[in-house]
Image (cartoon, rainbow, N blue to C red):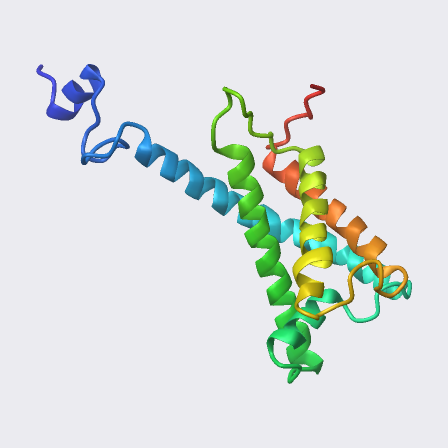
Length: 191
């Protein structure tokens, strides 16, 4: 017969108690926060899957004699004061690598899924191409940046032959998988 309060509010275009924009928030603010949180969660999950693909490349490079000890193991040993080895080092290295891959996946997802799509800056779309560029950026910031700055590994120009190229290639795989998973299966745009 008559409209309820919620139906009337929807008809008038105002928010009800359980909707974004309610409770004194600026219209769309709650929705934006939810979008960022959802993007970060999806990115973290995609980052974990992409890290597994990347790890397969790293293991293949290690079996080919190009890697020596895996970089995540070097990082964990440095973080623990070099007091860890054997199975505990392997377990911590896997956990640290998956955690880092998930965190960087969340950053990529938030950067490509949220934010403005018009104006002078257009955010990039999630796809394998932007993912590969992101993967290479993570490699550069890590292996030519903070990892050698902390004395964990030599910079790429001074590292053992094969590791820098293998790690860069593994990061390209990480980015391609990450971008593909977050693109929702959409084909790449040609623009």
